[in-house]
Image (tube, rainbow, N blue to C red; front, side, top):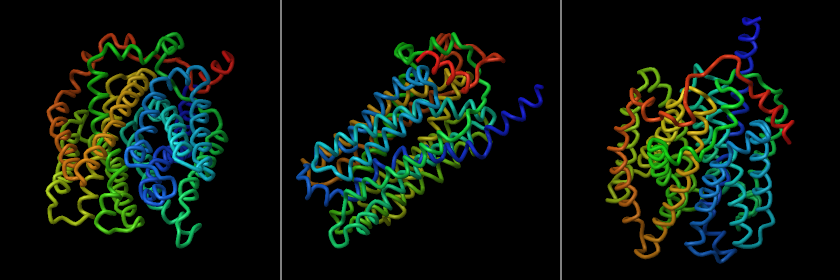
Length: 433
């Protein structure tokens, strides 16, 4: 009986579920990066200013953070399956509404709704991934993170192409932004079509019901994780908002600027996929690898700051490698702190929730600097300074001190056998409703 159950769990956490994880993750950044290469036609059509343009990145990032904090509670109410489905539906509606958006208000509303959907998905997926692949958490978290970055690359590269395909000489930015509703609907249907998968959870029912991100407010380690995650992603949000425009000021076309952003994202994909697996093969200590990714970011931002004679391709690869690797390593870092999947997922949810709200401020800062100086030099210098601040903070994540750092958080204890599966949790959530 135990052998049969183990075989079923191994099969359920195999290739089929990995595919659906990738499909879901592809939707978490495409809507965000799609607007940046189309910035000029959007501004011309709507009259939106630079501060409002920053809101196209700031609002969804802030919504991601706020919803991530409540995502675990939503998941406990309607189940992980229903929670992820609700998030994908919100992304689909938000993207589809952009096809008929007539002005800045509609665009900003859609950005906030899509961000809320992403936040809900991101709050639930790390715990689901850890439950599904407890022995391969590094590889699968890397795959999940790489798919997120890959979706961002698709948004940056494909949206200008779609806009030109539909609009000809005058790009149809509505189509370029709305096309991502199709991907969200496809992922939603695929997710709902998956049978209820049996995972062995490490958390008993009463413990799961007691989980709350509010407990993280009293944890120094939770705040440290959130601050580091937020500052790292502040570099990403700033580049998504302004990198194509930076090159547009140098005479580049929207497609060329989008291609640089897509190249950066491609490097993120490779780094997000490879770095956790490489780091895991060398032990539990992620600090050397985190420092390596930060060094790459610092080199990229310094090259932009000092207008170094470095090709844009090399700068994009450096920044992409640093940002993608740091993102996925931070996800593994949070999940490593607690052995229980539900508890680790709640900690990761808090890290993402607060972290994305911190990251949402970065495009405002860099946009304000751009507006008052006429260029991005000081903005890039600010982001390089942030990386310098992060370097000593990363040294505090000694794996030998994880247990002490999280002592008392969620009444953390080792997992026990016989705990409910995700399917059981989904069923319990349905009965509560």
